[in-house]
Image (cartoon, rainbow, N blue to C red):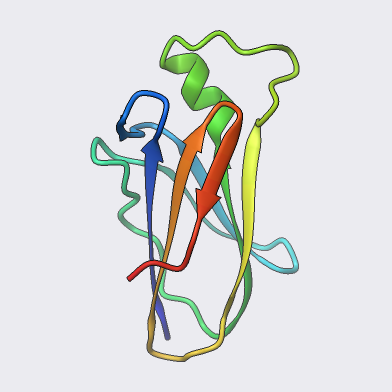
Length: 110
């Protein structure tokens, strides 16, 4: 099984994004994990996963509202969902998210 980690960074305020709700699901929509980022913007407790296709969804509008950012209704970004594939068994997959209320970036980290 492959290990999985994530790290959410708030590029608007230049800090880790604490308290972002995260859901990890299979391609079929089966929930594997639900939690939120810690004070460092990381999410401990993500499960090990087998090769396959997954979705990790970040509730970014809720995070920015809790941080005092005034967002339009509906917000431009509400849930940022990243569909990613795991091809290498026993590899580590890191899926970081750099986010602001109007844009985001991700990549396969280490």
